[in-house]
Length: 86
Image 1 (spheres, rainbow, N blue to C red):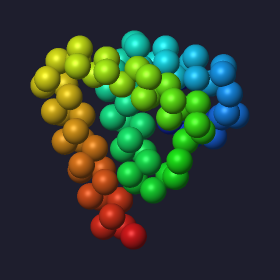
Image 2 (cartoon, rainbow, N blue to C red):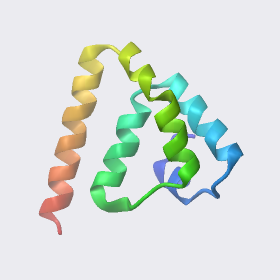
Image 3 (cartoon, rainbow, N blue to C red):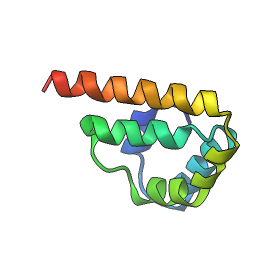
Image 4 (tube, helix red, strand yellow):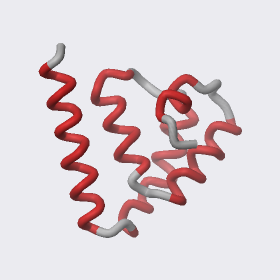
């Protein structure tokens, strides 16, 4: 599941949690991308998404530091652009 709108619009529940956990396990930076979508004003995701990100969030420590930094820079830039258009 790579489309964030699909995740935010999905029906809450255990199945969604399993899918998001798999996404985070495959790519720990998924947690940062989820936070970016929230910060850009998309609103809260279903609670299963929040739980899965919290439970699997420690995996970000396994991501290469450069990749984390680049994702954070992209996130800040996206947030800045979104704020400029408000």
